[in-house]
Image (tube, rainbow, N blue to C red):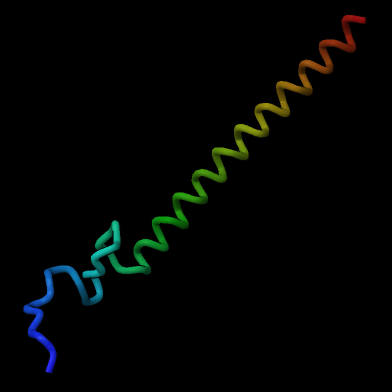
Length: 67
């Protein structure tokens, strides 16, 4: 027979007890928050790109009028 290893450490098993996890919520909760965060970041990126395009268009229209 093998040696008795003793009790497992707390947080080493169960639905919320994976020791390597950075969060303690259920997977569905984590997925929902990640999805929300991605959507918000995507919207911010789109707004930034549109504002840059608008600036580029204004610069081009200003350059063509000055010639």
